[in-house]
Length: 455
Image (tube, rainbow, N blue to C red; front, top):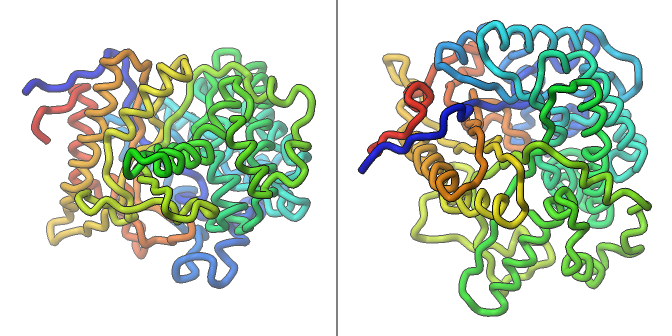
């Protein structure tokens, strides 16, 4: 077997999000977000854990950037905390909050690391939630204001912008399933939230371009491709419905194809669109389809769908694969899923450029007596998924970079600190960082720009 070489200029990065690592939730003028409220509500998160301290990255960012540089990391995908910059969702800029990201960007550039900035990774100011949140159209303009403020300040140095991380999570997981903040279980509100998130993306794209003329702008949906359990019509239909719910409802509008007609009919029949798409105004779909420079792909696993399982709640429609390996998130390891997605984005949607903006796995390997973390399962996972990326590139898919989720262990939302996704181990009591074996392995991948045939 030969080594798998990646194209010249391929970008190797790591990713995080603000609430999961920063801490300092009420410091330097930051107001509460929906995640502060949700995590501080008894019973909403594992062991009542919150991101109040997390990895203390707000104070320790120079150390963390030094650690990135020591591994040869070429790009860092991070998010800004909306309530740190525009407290309470208003127009008054909190200079201390914006200064933090100024310093972070300068620190990255000083170390030769390319910043990829995500504007929204689920930190809606609580004040805006109190006014109705994403189901309300007014929230759209508030997000555009955030995009304007941040791109005016950082657009001279940040050239890679992501409007939204995982619109499905912002809308469906948070407003229909109820596992994420604000914790609603309301189908019509979830679908309205989805529309307003997509609309805010489309409106923000030209604003970012105006403030940062050299910018490339995209969005990073999460993708869990669905495969039928058998070739029966029922299973094939179940997979098709999941695909519409999870992927096509978001991808089709972004790429100028409106909402998928089969899903509009399905949601209408189920009563989830009691007034149809009345919240879609003239010009909205054209706005959502604003040309983008790239699409991000967040992928970890797949779904196997059975038509024999009730589809109303979707989450119960998937079945397990007894022959497969699963991570500690109970997610199946299925690298062909990422391979298939990259081909689909290229051949079906015609994506101009693709970044794998999140890919990784949770395994709880600890620090041994020598200060080492032997996480071979993570290395094997990453190797398999990266090999799938390489195979898609050889098919012609325009994949320009790959970002490991996550740079370091962090707060895993409603699961608290029970899951460790990082290539850096974090001791939450001391805040000491330990590079795992996967971090050292990744350093070698970056150095050679290739995957060795034997991991």
